[in-house]
Image (tube, rainbow, N blue to C red; front, side, top):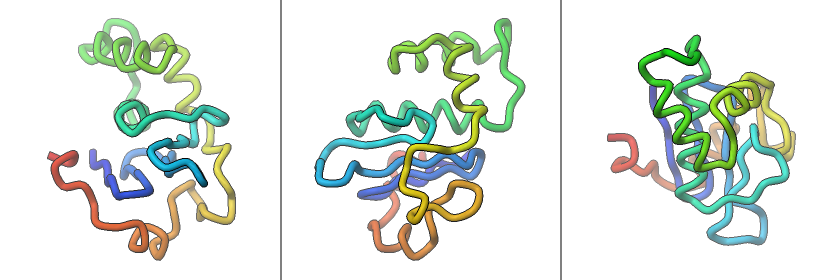
Length: 122
């Protein structure tokens, strides 16, 4: 489980979902599994963490992580089941020219976006 957080993009090795800084809107972000929503950076990190954790796992009510899933989903205005259902859908809502197959940003765009936020990865 690794989130890579740069100045203008966020990616994960566990989900094809991505986040990017909204065009023309500094300090505002878009997340591929929440199309049409504009988020602040901290909420975007929450959304990407939720996608990262639920992306490859069979999470359900009663799972030991469920209280955390519910809490993170609530920060996004969702329930746990709603968040998992949305994360399970393929990436959408970001400019397809900026995404490669599988929803990840193209490597040259990741490099151009700045250095990873190592603190957030710890």
